[in-house]
Image (cartoon, rainbow, N blue to C red; front, side, top):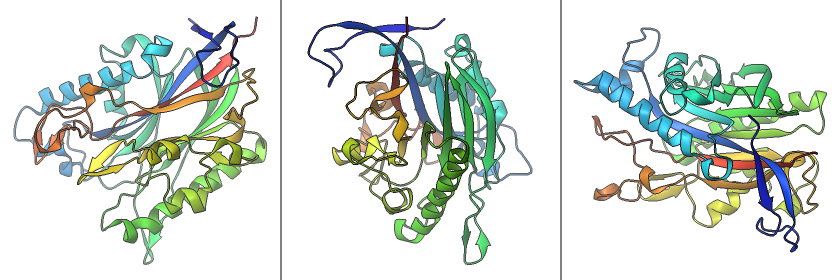
Length: 349
């Protein structure tokens, strides 16, 4: 059932001062790093023995289903206060396979939303993949493809995650989503920086492929980029823009750069605040002050950092409440907060 949110124009910042009511579709788009969502079955083709759940000595099945329940609980609440439903589209990272994703979408908290899945097995050594989950009543995929970023270091190929492109119709509008999980900072930020710059370059090639057929394509890039919005992968390779007034045709706008400069974060590592999880948009999805919502535009981007997702005690108080630590299950959710944004469009009479 299509949900129509009645918004007062004066309430949404930047709209006209008059309290005129209009009807809008509002849709939540999200991304969530699931922190090692592995099953309890050994895959002999992958190094999944190194996953935290396989390192547990007992109660693996109990831990697995508790983690599924906690992740599903989180997803069910993202954007709920505005839309009365979970995200219509959510990109995810660190899922071992399609089976764990099916367990997730069929859990008690999510099954009523009837999510579909787009997933490919990636070449990552540990077997972790990216994927897209979508409410089938709102989003209709028409094309998807996995791109190997083809990253080399010292003439050796890095077996990292694929980049997933999914094109489809959000209600009646064609959009394109690129889901990422770029190489980690293992070995240090400076040493690993070229790997993420190469991953960013692969994104530019995917964008170019999309724009060959549609120069005004509505594109959303999302993922755990393992880089902050101010790093070179964004500012030099993708040439992202921080301010709306800087955005020209063909540009990519990153609403999370401003959030990062204000101190918002999606993870904490050794007391450093990072905003690795982001959603970026192409210029046609940006409202630059015209107040033209005849087609979908981004209204607001946020970090979903509700209190229950943070550790309440100990040396990690205030950090994201992670699932695994020092070889044990902590009962937490993920070591990353989800991120999300709202797309809105005026309802046509």
